[in-house]
Image 1: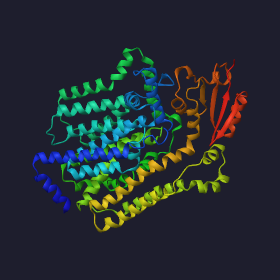
Image 2: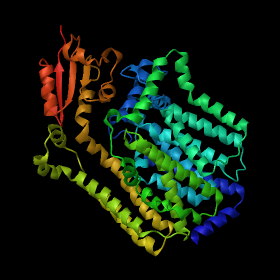
Image 3: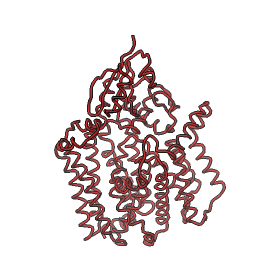
Image 4: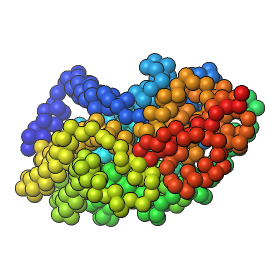
Length: 566
């Protein structure tokens, strides 16, 4: 009743007061999101491969002055277009070459995304629904985490989502807006998605649209002028960089780019394989709690509860795009967590829609959802408790570890304050309180118990847990690379990595990656080799390069140097 009174009074307000309230809410969103996403961005080193891949390309743009061609190790890198890397290069120009600058574009993307969701939600229904959708996205594990990362997908997903949203408005049965403007914005943002990560952004839209047409029995009213405008804008924006490459004579980079996209679909690229239902599991657990709150919406008859045609239209599109993305990347052989990250948009929408209906007393909150919420909360809570107590427990695990790399990694020491296990306890406690109270009374305050508990857990874990976990994974290697800054030398990790380029500040004169030369040839400067300490690999390396001298071993890594020939 209280919520109804608020929204009734809002409708009765003069227009200028409504606009002022909306402005204050949006300023509040910007400030709140900035506090969550920006502080501490540089607390942990960038992680291989994706974070370091893009950050290194941005750094090399600054070093070489070549902003036209994406490079890795000062060689053309054909896997990604440059839009996101341009964002990182600009950030590094302003804030220096560091982790903060590499991740800042995604923090800004997070702020933008929350504003977009709020405004779409309040336009489609009301302010409450806009806030619900926004908080579902903000308070879910992987969506929050990605806005504090340096990977390409947050901007890529946002561009696709906005492009599809304007097309959804265009296809709305009661569309009274400017259709030319809607299609122009749709084409513009889909084109920006292509410039960010490639044609898969357009592919997602095209398949989603094709499925929508089939379900709508191929009924679509359009003008040929509208289709021409959409196609021209999409073609111009989406192929802008590729056209410049062709005009500059870089035909090979286009060919390699296309072959790479095909390889992702056909093979387990870069060792990223996975079981068939990989993305189902990732989304179910990783988008907690929104993924579990969205489950009741997959009942076929649930849309009968929606009386608003505009909301029903958006619901259908969100459900279609969810299944398109999930099935598409289930078929793709390369399995990487963020490949299905576009699904965060439809999942959080469906969760917001369901909880909105529960709050309106039009749907009941299902018991199985409560059980799954508690189970997944216990999973995350137990994981954090185990990690923070790991240093005390690892001596009992050592006898069961069979490979040297894992054993060495476990011997790293993190610095825990002692109160980190409380993070997991608080998550479980707030989830339990929500499940108890939702049975008695479904209110916004009850829902806030779940969302605030989740948000607290995610945000503090990123501050206090992730930097400590890094010490068990890559910290020893990164520390070595940093020690070689300014030294005229070669560095060659035997396992695929981009860390040695970024953290040693590689210059073109040190960019040799010729394995034959560095291991056996005549070199004019020392070459450092970094190996993961697997016994067979180390013995093989020593056999092949007997003149390499062992420097030291640390936390699963072993470091050698081959001196230059005077």
